[in-house]
Length: 371
Ligand code: ATP
Ligand code: MG
Image 1 (cartoon, rainbow, N blue to C red):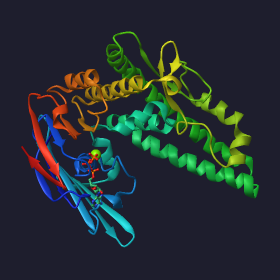
Image 2 (image 1 turned 90 degrees about the vertical axis):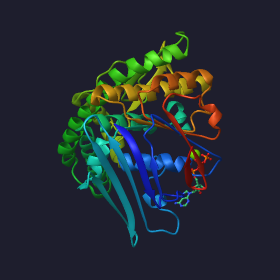
Image 3 (image 1 turned 45 degrees about the vertical axis):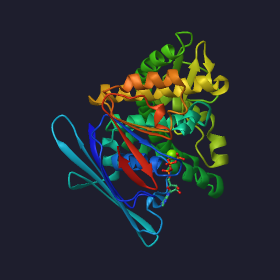
Image 4 (image 1 turned 30 degrees about the vertical axis):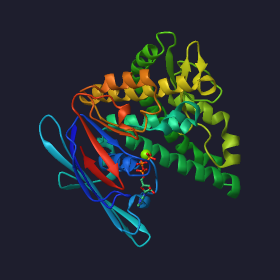
């Protein structure tokens, strides 16, 4: 898939624009607060229907306006396509309409069909931050490559909500414990299905990420990825089944009732990042190791998508060139070279070496000027 143009109207501070973006590497440069990240956000929003910066999509509409629209034209081996997202306010309610080649599609279908990897400085938190950040990495990847994953995850989340409501009813209103049984069964079934898909993805991602990491560290260190279902479990090759989750639920039923919430499951599981021999990076990684690790995880995502879908996703690099040192920058540019359509923001365009097939755009006060 190759993006050929972006059209945006009332998206954040961007002036209406209709940009030709046929190059493999598109560099947006300019001073702070001019609209560079907004441009990447517009591309991300048009391709998957979400913002990477906010869950409140009203913020995306230009201040003082009531409606935004973005669309991207792209082509694959066979034909040309257009994806269009329109978002507006009706009173206090936000409305959204998504069209693929002129036909309405549901937000879920849009998200599932997207093919985008974003790398921003916030991603460096993935190594040391909360497990939710690492789960999001897996969930986003699987949603884009496995057509069943998103529905499974949504059904699971709903089951957890219902179970939590019941836990509170048991605690506060004396509802019988036996009411939990069918919910627990459904919970364990869905939990095991999600874990199995996450584990299968990790199997592939870890092999690619380890190769990248190893060469970044001059083959002195190796990166290990593993799925972790309990906070205290260290590095293990455990493969959780419905029975594993059932045993964990049993063990903490009293506690769950007391809290009115479900304390284990895929919504709490973690992706363990470790340096052998079994050193958890969350506690030990240096700044440089964190950067290498996240870069390895992102490149693994690109290659994983290519294997699953037959072509590379688009890559959005927000301000990461200044975060990466020369070696890592070279490594990244070498990987994408000519294969991965990439959109880069940077303050100083001198940070981007001249690459074949690159196009530069200056961004100033929400306007984009091709060079
Ligand atoms: P930096 O180099 O600092 O990352 P940037 O060029 O990436 O800067 P953006 O994050 O794209 O900057 O933001 C540009 C401007 O957009 C900011 O001044 C911000 O206040 C403005 N902005 C954000 N949301 C809206 C909105 N809904 N309406 C109008 N302007 C907005
Ligand atoms: Mg920015």
